[in-house]
Image 1 (spheres, rainbow, N blue to C red):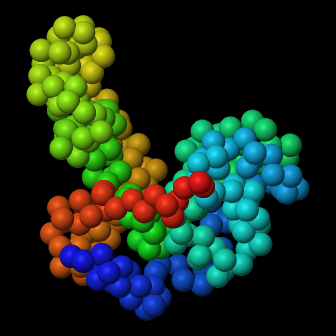
Image 2 (image 1 turned 180 degrees about the vertical axis):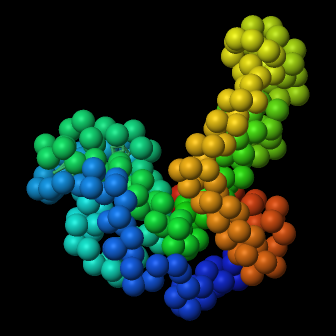
Length: 253
Ligand code: SF4
Ligand code: SF4
């Protein structure tokens, strides 16, 4: 699908104003305990932005985000939720340690991301749509194997940046892991050991009771609907989302 057609679809989606919690975004956001915990009283000093590693590289300013949330303006919040901005944070929490008012911009970002996903507004930004990749790859690895990155599902073809050494490791997994002393898929202790079923069941329970499972299902469903709208298979849509990176739009310099 040509990129212009793809972005026209998103424009149409925006134009039609289709998203959940329309007119109630502020109300929904302020129900999140992370807003209460993370935003007490901001004095606009900008220290969070000064220490933020993401602000060094991206067009990103946590102080401005706190300002927008504090204004409680429905349109401004909608713009923020459908922008790439909220996805630049690395959740390192450096801002928490330095804020003179004990705010936690990183926590506020977490609440914004969740609402962006629940509302569907995340589908209108490049980085937001990449949540599909996170859910499909990382979350399923966690639930199926207990690891974010699991060697047997790691696809070298989509990680060419690892170079020929990465390909060699990918092609000789068992031999290499035996040589470096890891316990790949083995019972008992050791790196990359098989995670027992009881532990995987506990992980699944945590995902269920925290609402993560529901959110993941919603992301998969949104992605499928968008793939249908763009006349793509789910796999083609995955690769479109995975490979699109308009870095000049995102980077600071
Ligand atoms: S460091 Fe704290 S008080 Fe200063 S701008 Fe950031 S959130 Fe506000
Ligand atoms: S948690 Fe996010 S906003 Fe805070 S310093 Fe880290 S990257 Fe910046």
